[in-house]
Length: 172
Image 1 (cartoon, rainbow, N blue to C red):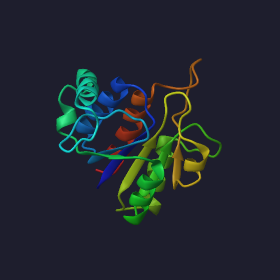
Image 2: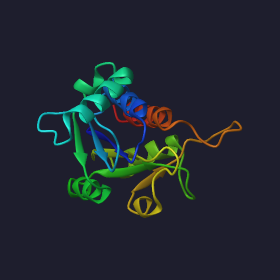
Image 3: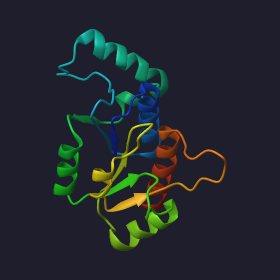
Image 4: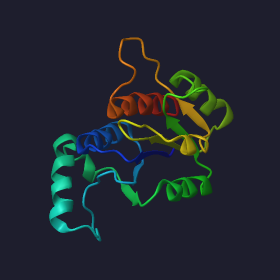
């Protein structure tokens, strides 16, 4: 099963590094970065070398080498990413607190019953603002991790790890 992580407008290089470690550990096929999300340097990178190297070093502190094992692509905007994924019949899932969202268990039940065999992409958004409403309207499923404590949400990299674990363990 082909699984993609889409990270849009993530601010923290530490979160990006954690995405790489999680994706490597769970067998996620690729990460697509869009907006201002930092990403490691790559051959043909058009960013200023000192800037790209600084971000790569910061990402490496958390990724610990997984930035070299998980393929990634960069996109200027999220519309390009969504168009790319929809063209390949990918099931698009947003991880977000939203009316009508479903739990990870319900999400994986929907994946296996309605979308069996199709590629899957998990969209995560900005640490403060999450995934925008106009993006949520284009998703096939919106998944929310239920919270039981006093805090309203988890760190984006932690929530991503939980969601990807649920998806990958169900689709094995």
